Image (tube, rainbow, N blue to C red; front, side, top):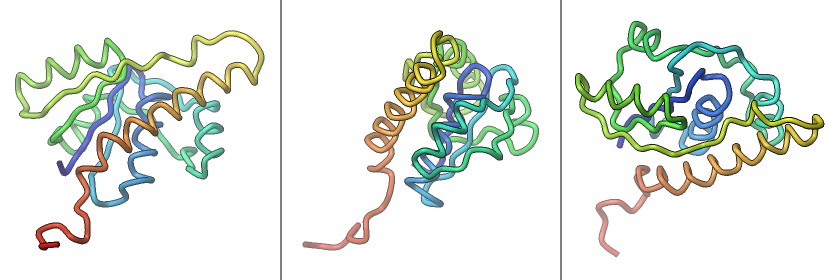
Length: 151
């Protein structure tokens, strides 16, 4: 696998978290982007919880699938969807592009009520869950230094 697209509803919390985490762990070995079905606004809690683990997401600019397609096309090996709306949109895309689609149901932390700390905990749970799944799913995509060599 050479390229991954993360998609959620508005590209303001879940998919930018996933994009930033994948880039952090896999650098340039896998091309990573994110987009939303609709366009949202950069979310301060998302930026804050990512900075807690040393990832700067403050420069993220939410974009839609249509904008991404206009700017660079949608040539991805794998599309990982994080919301039902995004999954439906990705399946529609596979009518015209050849990509595998995986659905990772991921709750929307923006609907969490309560104190600031309670809301931040919801974002942290999403971040940590995505971190685990991304490392597990994409680590096999990286070539190890011993690929192709005998033991």
